[in-house]
Image (cartoon, rainbow, N blue to C red; front, side):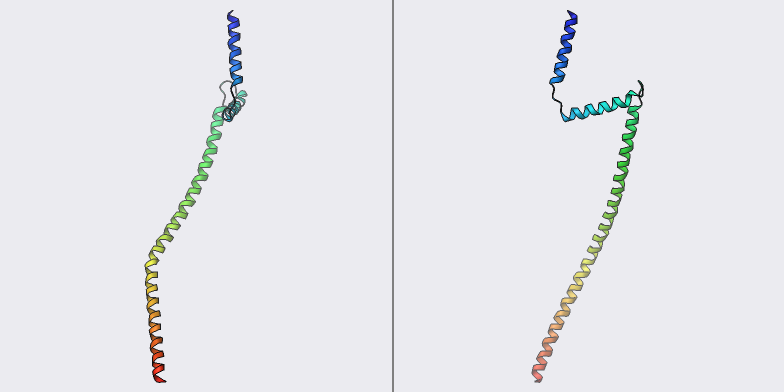
Length: 125
């Protein structure tokens, strides 16, 4: 009887395993596990597949981090240039206002001179 109980348990486990729906997440996990197992098959029991895999992943991540660092440094340079431009604009604004005031005064002077000269011409005639 104990043998039949074991068989029943195995059947229950098998049916439970087949009833579970596979999700994309479990498929991905299974795929990763199979890759690790394949890598470890030729390596013996100790298996250097995991350290090699980790090394490969770390090297890839290091490369990605280096790319990000260079992108960030170029962004920092651009930000510095933008800040300098902003400071220059702030510096130039008061000077621009002063020039605009001077221009309006000159225009007023030209208008008054025209009015004076036209009135003198009328008086002469």
